[in-house]
Length: 172
Image (cartoon, rainbow, N blue to C red):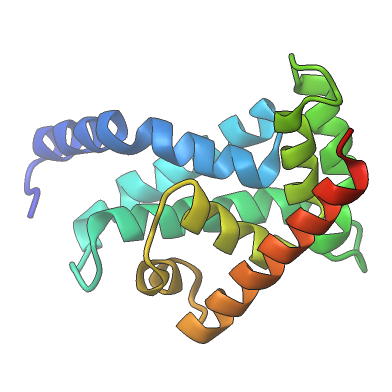
């Protein structure tokens, strides 16, 4: 347990040094734009700093950090929605952000793959990202998202199928 403010500051700095880049890319895969990812990172950092003293070790520290990062990324997406709009309907606007920020050819395999991901509902995309990019076991993803393992396996399976379908339709 970190007792003094200087210990907490040091611990916080070490956490961000170790996990900051991973958490940034996790958030960025959800929100797409760098500016939105920076906003979510800032809020995430504040939540981690304020909450680290209350961390109870009921899960791994990385799981706790990813849960906060995921929640902040989803919060940023929700802010982009109209009153009756679902975050799942943001795919087209997120695709536009991807194209605006991408330094790659719009028809490159990497951009097509990212566009395929953006067509997924948010929960499928999060499950896919954590499993594919971060190679997390379903049990850890369940702790991050609050979903059960069976639901996550189904989300991942449907995500893979939808990505394959998209790539088959739009591949050169």
